[in-house]
Length: 309
Ligand code: G3H
Ligand code: 13P
Ligand code: ZN
Image (cartoon, rainbow, N blue to C red; front, side):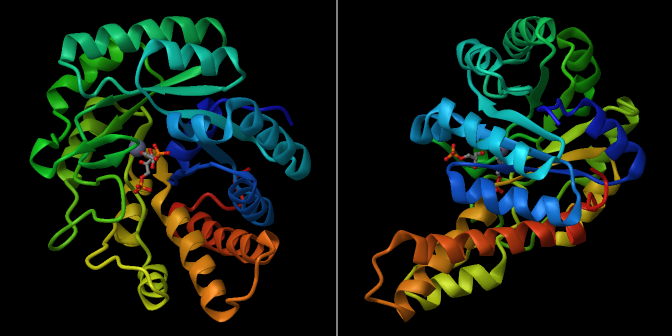
């Protein structure tokens, strides 16, 4: 099975009322944990790579590791650029074998977002690569960009038809109250399902993407706090809200923070219990297993895409 785009995955997900998991990858253990989980439950996968991940691990290493995962699992896997900020990085990823890219023009005014997104779509489509655009702005931290809560902007349903029509994007990321990172809500978690519903009505059959969708699983936050960490007030999107979004037009759900928390909690616990260990396999191995179990849980119980590969 070669790398695939997300086109067919999204079509089936939309019709089936489930979502594909888009998991951020940064190293071998993360890739193996995610892909081994997907193999066990026969789920299609999107592995996404941020600019920061490309800088940390290098494009070629991540690409080869993902190719190895495809050979090892035989699964349909799409490799996607997460939050591409300009045409150049999208082009580099398209030329370097990615099957999907996100051009995130959400920080620009509407017309500039359209211009930039269309430029990427024109280049990508010629090469058989699909494109995710974004309208609206999430709060939280991505790479070096920190968007304060008061700067976050819900997606305006009045803009979505024109944006999709004029850019030709294959999917659209929207802002309905989620945010990046481990501190998503100060009070009670609240998502604007009314906005999602209206967007779905305006764009029937069109795949929507939800960023900032980690649940910030309390078990891992508690473990981090117990073993010397300090994450008071960490809070994520409740799983029942994600299930509801997946049953609607949301076809791609982005998860990174939960992987980071699972890995960090497991490594902290390991060192608390085995302070003398210094062989990286002894702590990275359990971290990889924790990621695998977490991803299996997401695929089966939250996203509903188990058995759909
Ligand atoms: O949305 C951002 C993702 O969590 C990627 O994070 O840019 O630190 O790799 P990163
Ligand atoms: P989380 O920080 O909620 O995992 O969001 C990840 C994301 O949206 C990557 O694009
Ligand atoms: Zn994101």
